[in-house]
Image: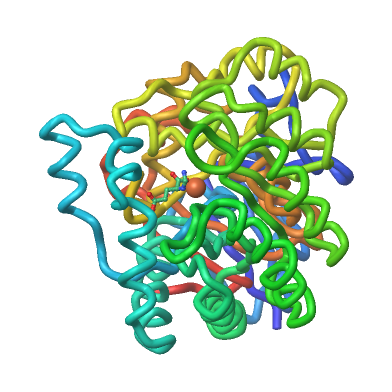
Length: 409
Ligand code: NIG
Ligand code: FE
C-alpha cells in the first residue's frame, strides 16, 4: 500500500546516502526540497520529490496543507522508566541545596531506587508508556532508555524487562542501556557494588540479552575513571558498547575513558575542558549535550558551540528523568541549544535528528529523510522558516506525527 503525503511546503532533513552523522560546518546545512511530496511503502520512505507534475498516485493520500515536514526527533539519552516523581527535591533545590548535596544526603537517585523497589513491573510499564505517549505527540520517534534505578541485580533486571516490553509493544523505536553503575545501591559499599556489577549484574544482563549498550555515571562522587574502565571492559565481553555519563559535575576523566573504550557517545559534558574536545577528534564517539539538565539544575551548559567549531559533531538529548530534568520535550531542548549554547537552528535540528540517531546506533535507518529509511516524521503548522521552530519555544506547532508511516493520534 502506497501512502503519499502531498502539499508539503518544505521537506526538511534530507541526507545523502552514507551520511550517518554530521560534523563541523556540515551541521549548519539542512537538506531540503521546497513544495514537496513524500511517498511511503511498508513503513519506509519509498520516494520523495517536488510536488509538481509527476507525483505518484497513492492508495492513501494525505494533505500536509503546506506545513513543514521534518524527520522525528531522536532522543538518545533518557531515564524514563522510573517510579513516581521527586518534586520535593525540586523545592529543596529552590531553597538552596545542590543536586550533589541532595545525592550525598541519600536522596536523588537512591530515592527513586527505593520507590522503584516497591512498584510492580506492570505499574512501571504504565507510567513509562504514558511518558512515551507524551514524547511521541511532541515529535519524538526514537528513544534510548536506561536502567539505573534498580541498583541491585533483581531490580536492574526488572527495569530492563520493562524496557524490553516497551520495545515490543510501543510504536517508537527503543534501544536499551544498562546503567547499573548509576549510583551505589544502599546496601553495598562502593567496592562491593563494583564487584556485584562485574561479577553478577553484567553477566546476567548479557546472558538474558536485555541491553544494547552499557553506561556508567563517571563523575565526582559516583564512579571513578578506573572503575568505569573495568565496568566497560566487562560490558564489552557481552557486546554492550558504552554510552556514558561524563563531566556533568566535574571534569572527571569520563571523556578520555569513553573514547578509549570506543563509546558510541559521551553525554552531559557540562564541565568539559578544551583538552577533552581534542580527545574526541578522530574518534567515532558522539558528544551529546543535555541542555534541559543545565536549565533545570541551573548549571553551566556543555560547550557545544566550541565542539562544532572544532569540526566535530554534536547530538542533543532530553535526559528525561525524575531528578535533573523531568521533561522529554525535544523541541524545547532544540530551543535551549540555540538560546543557551549558541547553536544555529539548523545545527540544533541536525543535532536532535541525524546526530541523535547516530548516538543511539540508529542513523542508518532513522534520523533523516532518505529513501529506505523508516518513515518517522512530523508535520508542522504552516511556519515561516525552520528558525521558527526554536524561536516559538513553547508553541505547539507540531501538528501531526507519523511512526512507521502511520499517523499516531
Ligand atoms: O543524567 N546524572 C546522572 N543521572 C541522571 C539523573 C538521575 C536522577 O537524578 O534521577 C542525569 O542527570
Ligand atoms: Fe542521564
